[in-house]
Length: 333
Image (tube, rainbow, N blue to C red; front, side, top):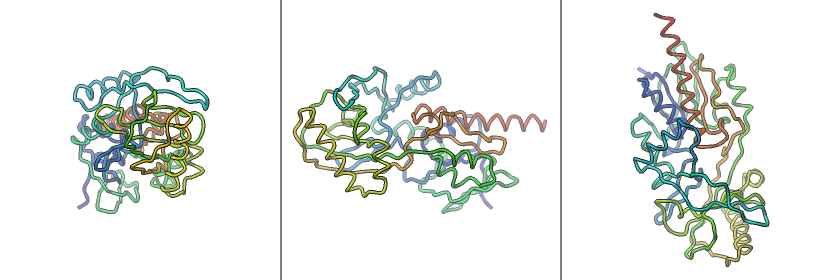
């Protein structure tokens, strides 16, 4: 007999886990499915024997009261820390200090708070969902292993992936399909020698690189490990290049910048690359809802690409489903 759940959440990034946490707190039986080997989505850290790089989300801020309360809990648990080092902006001619604000990172890795959230949930990793189907009982989820069904479903995955799963006749399929998402190439570098720059991270508003950071300047890290994010335009133009080609081109650009800032050209001990095909979305909505059908979407792409937005999007998705269930229960009583 197929397993049955109150809610299945597809995607174990910030949005999926915050939705699952909210639903579980309300007494719902929740299963979280994640296609990758680990949780976190773009709150990811790449590691080798002697180094690590936060190659997705670089930090997060907290503006809303709801998220500030969650951040305070993570701070008390030593799951995150403040990244107080200076952040600059480069316009092609001048470096200027960026606006001051509190920036937070996971400790010792970016996904540390998500790992704590997942520990209290039923999460299955390395599960590739291949189809979802509306049934009289809710939603049937098909994957590369037996999953079962749920009365309600949260898709906390990039819009193009959600659009590929949602049945064509469903009202949310077109909404998801019409969302465009931008790619981003990330390059991870290690140097034997220190690089003496006045910043820990910099927004680059000119050229192929959009962001560069001394990853090791973050709390809980050490060494000379650097992270480069390519601009959207550059990433789109080089989307199908090999990792080696991307590394060579972005190192060349980084070395050009270092020379401009009075630094000698470096020979990197390690160089790796990762392509985020769906790095950032274009919608400013908190959640795309069709909760009456038992299906909602969530994710940072619905909230300006920010980690806080992903968290709030998951909360909103969970609350939308809980409201539908409460209404159904009232109608039955």
